[in-house]
Length: 155
Image 1 (tube, rainbow, N blue to C red):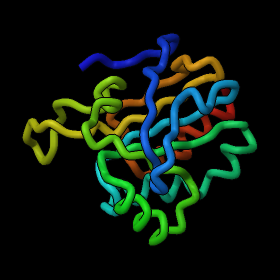
Image 2 (image 1 turned 90 degrees about the vertical axis):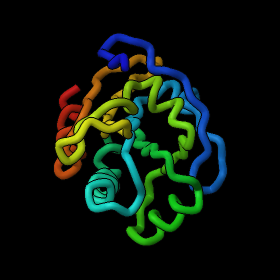
Image 3 (image 1 turned 60 degrees about the horizontal axis):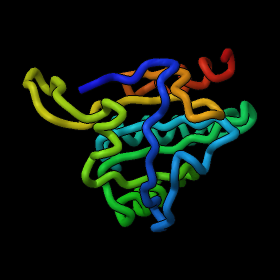
């Protein structure tokens, strides 16, 4: 699994969101975007992370940075998750995990002391031209959104 680094071109993607609308990385050209990958809707860590990104959406918007979450879950699960926690950020579906793989956000990881294949909780700050400005891999869900906001505000 290749990890992306600052200065590399962000892999292009087009995925569907919770409403079935196609969303592409190209849609964000000209502005910065946070793309974060998470394992599963409505689990404790993923809920914490999504809610914390959501709580900071106004601050991200003030820094002219959009936020998008991506998981393997489908539109129906995303819709329920968004409604349950009043999430305003778009959630995209990557059921075959191909986009995750292109970002190095899917592969071998340790889970409960065992080596497994799965989603590696990862976040990317992508600049106005589609270049990786910053990459975070194997992040802890709680408090991560604040760290990303701090990096964006200081960037």
